[in-house]
Image (cartoon, rainbow over all chains, first blue to last red; front, side, top):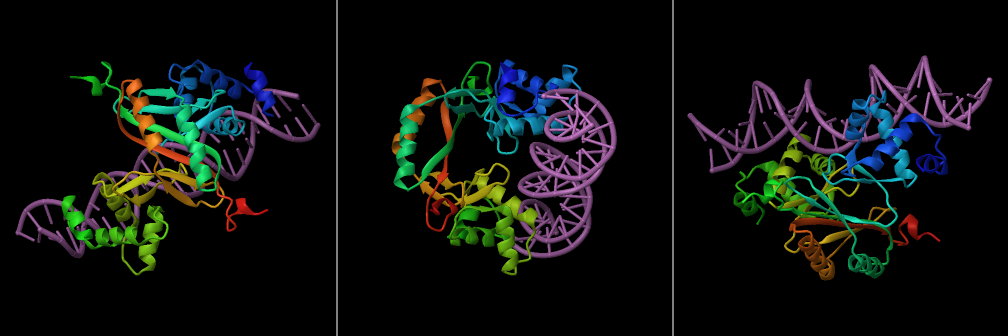
Length: 141
Length: 141
DNA sequence: GTCCGTGCAAAGGATTTGCATAATC
DNA sequence: GATTATGCAAATCCTTTGCACGGAC
């Protein structure tokens, strides 16, 4: 339960934290910016500040509850961390995001790190392309 | 020659552009921020503006002369684009950067894109770890 | 009641833009 | 000489911080 996750992370159970955590679990598109979280909650009538959203998301990241990505380079997006790691494939035209996991690549990364004497801690793999769907500009014929 | 690269990109041959292009080719550590380029040139006595550095690097990126990366998330770094693509492995402790290429991963990426109906355009793969070298905090016993 | 958390406004850092001047072709 | 570049300063965008008040335990 959300509440237990907060306690486990040593964070007091407050309204903003609960609202943000719940919201992250209800999204259609699991990748959101701090601004989007803020706007969504404001629209829902919450009296929350943008600074709090940033603070909470940062705390969640440190607690391992969420992951932070820099798909676009200028604005961070957050997503609820799931048990098994995954990477991303996204459409340059419509922004659609697909998550995937690939054992072959994961193993190869370990080999590369070992080859250079590194102890691998984490990695970021993002593929960019055109999804070619009917609802995307890249799919128009 | 540097000059020809500029002309080929449809950019006039100006002092700032030549200085930046030359500098990028002479670096020990090929990954630099706009600020570093700016400081290095100022220290060398050039009368250049930071805004120009940003403008030129952006133009170079669009011309395919340089690549822009977001290793740290908050500050972009640039490097001269080489013929064959490569990915990066970097040390979380000392910032050391190693470049590598891996056919297995490249092929696997194509398969993934195909599997989801995407036309792959580009990708970013960065591995983070500890290099364990004697000159790095991660290497101290 | 103590301590941590929050909202708001101000500060910060990286990058971009407006504009008059200066350089390239 | 016309057009494109440049330097400087101001502006913008995203994110963080300072501070007094409010809420959790």
